[in-house]
Amino acid sequence: MNRGAEFRKRLLSQTVVGGHVFLNDPAISEAMARSGYDFIWIDAEHGPFDKQQLLMHVIAANNGGSAAFVRVTRATMDVIKPVLEMGIDGIILPMITSAQEAKEALELCLYPPKGSRGFGPRRAIAYNNQSLEAYLAQSEESFVRIIQIEHIDAVSQVEAILALEALDALIIGPNDLSASIGLLGQSLHPDVLKAGKIVIDAAKRAGKPVGVSIGPNEVAIRTWQDLGVDFLSVGDDISFIQEGAKRTFAMLGHNLV
Image (cartoon, rainbow, N blue to C red):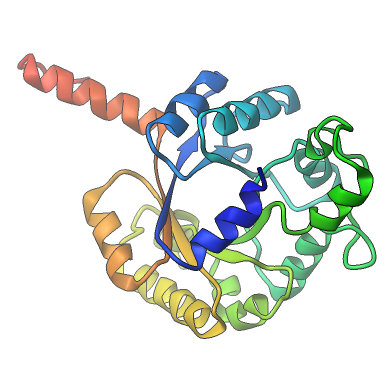
């Protein structure tokens, strides 16, 4: 199943929802996928994953019925190439601060002549059970390429970033965006929301989907929905454990330390 192509169509026609995974056990990705998430955001940037663990999470998310997205640590060939060879459904490219950085990152995701991606698919070509011709014919559309806007410098160049043909979508990272304007920890500050709105409006004009990455906070969810995002990556394994424990202790009449 070409989940990347399917997800690209859904982004343009309906609101989709993803969730973040930070913890190592791939059963978490499968369980979250089975809870109804459209995609699972496997966070290699902040989670303690090695390549083997990433692969297991990708397989688990797909087995649970969700698209498997990986946020890589940085946009370099040595990082991006092995992740794409795992047959992921989407890649999230973090901390892009300029249109030139975005262009270079996207080129690492595409085979020549459009890009500079190295060739060596494994799971991506169904462990050689898919013909090379068929794989190459659909490799570009088989996964979604998302640039994360989480710095004010990227906001100032968002229209040039959106003009890049290889770009499928943007996703806003409010926490680092707030830090880039001296407001770390104030992700709902009016100045952060103003910057986010600039990104959202530009994406609408360009006809490309734009989302936001946030925690399971109702105020934040409603705020970004009202600003007009097309999709959300909301909630994560660690937050759900914490919130569940807090509710349980509250029912017992105890405070969670």
